[in-house]
Length: 370
Image 1 (spheres, rainbow, N blue to C red):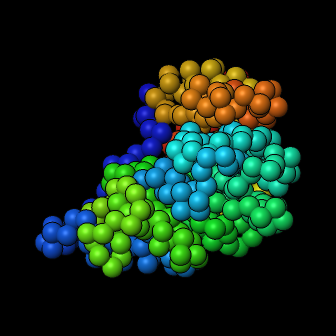
Image 2: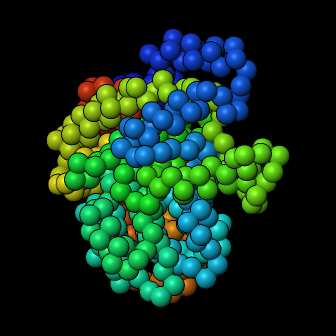
């Protein structure tokens, strides 16, 4: 029997980084500044530069990053934030956490992302922001969304949790909106060795508010003075050290993901359709998402062959019980997201996948239609 192919091999991904990670770990253990150590500021500066943004503040995780951006923008009770129905629940959770209401919209059938056409009908008198999700490693059509946001005076926020290094029209994820939120969950393109997140922005005042909110509302002039009610959501020094090591190889790792995605695109059967990439997008393929007619049959075959898989996501946000009250007016008006939820399937994807492993996955999928 052919060897198993895991959905994601985190141990394998870190094998070649063991020595630099050990050195970074030793440095932090040596100075003992486990919170707000020098590695945090160094990573923040490097990641801001990488994202082509002015500033970066590290936070505890990607969900906190989203919530802190919305809070710092002053979004709260009585406001609506436009959110795609096709996203992880953290996007909507952040909106609810600040007291606002998520206004779910449908996505394009080719990329499964929002654009100005899907968002425009949802803009209303209570709309305060458009929360754009760059899903599966591909950015949404930002020029159109930026123009729409500007026309209506709305904040444009990027949920870039799955798009580290992605570009649209030549510009990086994180360089388009008022701010962008990133997750460094271990399985991300740039993943920590635990939880972590960051916000990047060109708005120095916004970053300063976020930095204060994530550190208990502490005054910059007096650490014992708390000017606002904040929270504890800081990027640990150890995680910042690891992220600094991994950031140096991110572009190379993303190129490997692009090669895997291209191999899938060429070798999969015609009935197994990869999510389209916009011609102006440079995707980094956080996930290898396809649409299949009979997902149950394909997953049975993958299970029998020892091949890992996932579904991102089987229940659209507007159909989640947690957001039932917020989605009451969505009704059956989001058909693309609902149809996609029945047919999407995520195949193995990580930079270390071999040509043979991808061929094996495609062979098993092709066998379902034989």
